[in-house]
Length: 66
Length: 292
Image (cartoon, rainbow over the protein chains, first blue to last red):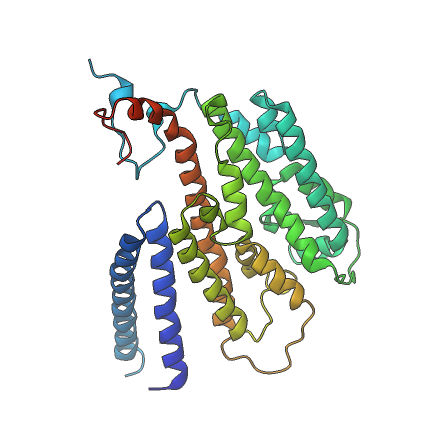
């Protein structure tokens, strides 16, 4: 895998975790619960965006690059 | 008969509406956003309003003095509209202090096309932004006081919690005794900001160069100001392949701090109102409390 792509993917995953952590912290007092929520939300968030990116990439390759 | 006081409101949706004594006053928000301190004055707290007015005005004027005509150049020359500049709507967050910003902007609106950015501009821009943010906090405080009256006097202030949360990520929650959440917030946001500064090789967003990114970054408070001061005038002498990602990181860290500011404020607000029910609960341990 190209190094730049790997760096961007890692940065994206990191941002998913930070955004999810901040959203989980909002109006939730229980810190262990925040961490569980963060794991769940960041996984779903990253999976959703990843699927969206893969679908977009596939469509572009299929309709534009062929 | 089921009265309003007997309704149980889940704490996470918060606000303990059954304990709020007075109707909210929207005019405190509208007037306060125009002129600092008038929200408190409307609620009969003229002294507090005068203090807010003086503090916000002094901070803003000090900032504009340090920035000088470059404030107008930054916002005015790029967006001409019918012969007049409309750059002032981009002066975020200063616009939360509308009248003062409008007056100063027009006072500085002279044709100074080559106005250099002075060396104190990094601190100056932070102070002008601080004026707007302080006014938002003062408006929220005035609205809170108008709702609860003297009930919250002597308790930890939501305004101070919000101010601390803006200045240092996590400090607002630390002030409220929520150490775990303070550590989480400070760690997540400061690490993200540090990564952003690292990826841009220390050239964190400067207002005259990255206007929109800077407006998000400044919401991180003192760490952003410190980075701006240390990196002011730093020239980019090499290709930075991850610079845009760095800008994104620094801006996202500031924007996410808004969540922590709001959370610290609402937590302090709940704390300031909720303890009024505690003495009765302590006297009668069988009485169920509203807060789980």
